[in-house]
Length: 197
Image (cartoon, rainbow, N blue to C red):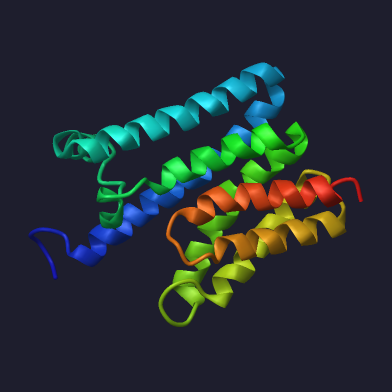
């Protein structure tokens, strides 16, 4: 189809590409927080999570505000998020919880894994996976990216393998957006158990 309004498929693809780009960009928050004073890093993650939750509450409470937020965000919200918290809010809370619960080095690595592994899973799964929904190809990409990030952070092969695997398991949960909360927590927890081995 040429000319006229873009097809629904093209609009969906653009929205998902934009969401993945933002997701990847959020990975920089891990190293940035690691370089900041600990109290500033904690306060920044808390503020980000609080702001995301407040924005969701406002847009869900008022259709007019919801339309305004969607217009400013460039239609980054999925249709399912018109009546539910956004994936971005779940990700912000996952980052905050990881930073609150784990050693800063573990939390920073978990943030980077969450920022990069989930979009890798989506990209590979859409191109090489079979069937609708989450695919084995996507899960393999998630585990691989998670492991590579952890190796780059200087963790042992055992910790990197465990972190990549728990990231892939957390990413496979069937409820949309919940993986954004679970991946940083799962990876941070795995590193807390195995990070020194």
